[in-house]
Image 1 (spheres, rainbow, N blue to C red):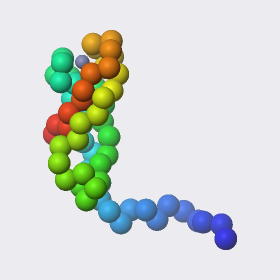
Image 2 (image 1 turned 45 degrees about the horizontal axis):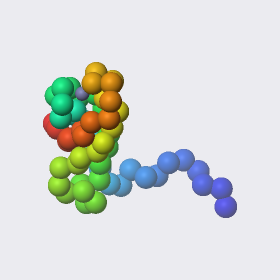
Image 3 (image 1 turned 60 degrees about the vertical axis):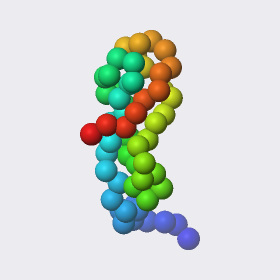
Image 4 (image 1 turned 90 degrees about the horizontal axis):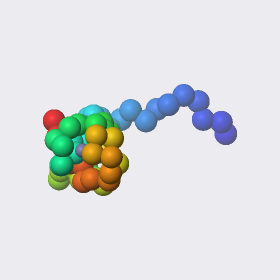
Length: 60
Ligand SMILES: [Zn+2]
């Protein structure tokens, strides 16, 4: 019952950038599933420029 290979390429998930809303720098990139999150992604992440946790918004 061993799974061979990676066959999880059916859904194309575009790579998006997460921009810090404080310093406006895109310091993170992630992938998202448009089906699960059709709206703009917003995540609280640690910004290395601001040196603190800031809300990061999806940008292109
Ligand atoms: Zn920042």
